[in-house]
Image: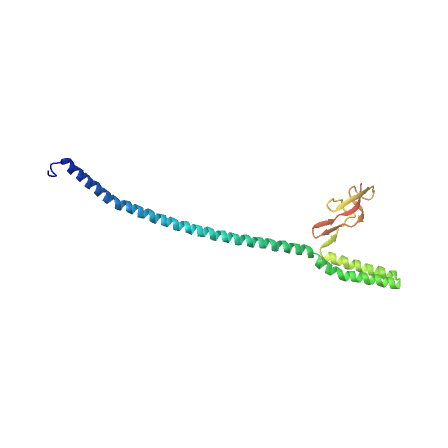
Length: 193
């Protein structure tokens, strides 16, 4: 029997041949798609690795910055403690000659029993302290004859006075002081009523 005698066999052969042809032409397309996908995956993996390296670098940089900041904070705290510890050093150094003068005046007056020398020595010591404190910005608060001001005065008593209006400081019991612009001790005063 010839192949022409069986038409279905010929059709099957033709259809198998056509299917094989389709697969043959489709296989390079799929292979091309697979190659593109694998190239894309390699590219994405490379970008991912690059991002990981950048993240690690940023993390290490952040750790260094954090360590630098911690060291700065520690140094600043130590400097602040040192400053507080020795803040009065300059004032103490300036007071020492005055203390020396005071000791000499006391010693001299004890040996000679000269109270005039003691008074003179005390006066010199007081003036030295006053000059030092003035140079540092300390000023006494002027009170007597001034209107009572609770920022600068602490009223200890109220007294009747025909010589003063109501609310005027008539007597200062203890001096008050201002250091630069800050009241460090209000004056204790009697106020007229």
